[in-house]
Image 1 (cartoon, helix red, strand yellow):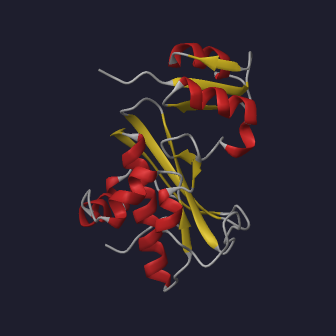
Image 2: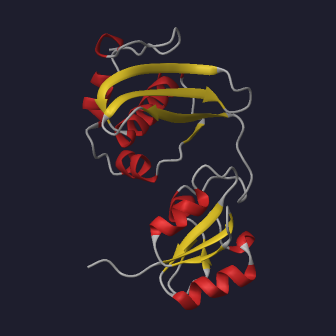
Amino acid sequence: MAKQKYYVVWVGNQPGIYASWGECQQQVNHYHGAKYKAFESQAEAEKAYAQGWKGYWGQQTRSGGTPAASRTAKRNAAPEEAGEIDYDSISVDVGTRGNPGPVEYKGVDTQTGDVIFSCGPIQKGTNNLGEFLAIVHALAYLKKIGSCKTVYSDSANALKWVKQKKGGIHAAARCLNPGNLGSCGPRGELAA
């Protein structure tokens, strides 16, 4: 049985503490800029609500409700300080219609927003698969041009799979062959 969680809504239709995800969703769905977070105990939720969202929202928490730095951020210890962005980088993201469903992804120059590659739709894909393929595509592109730029992704699962070499990077590279995709942008081609 799942543990009881408490949901703090700092910014939403009706800020407060909610005892179910359904109640929380009613306050944050379709609310632009909503700020909310789940806590393991009512006491943690009450403390967080009283202290405000700035110390909690967007951060993982340790037991006891105190903010903790993201494990991914620690593992990815880049030369920049926390909060700084390496703009000489590639940022990747995915779009899906259903999960599973058609998946498309892009890699863009973080500084300019220029599209470096764009692929899809890939039929019967998942969000995690698309995120993984986007990272692998970016790494293959960087290898092809001889660059060591940073690749940004918002997918903890996909980053974990790449780091642990799970999900079959070689199989993913075969999937990235433009012949296996619905369409790839003009700069999205990879060497087979």
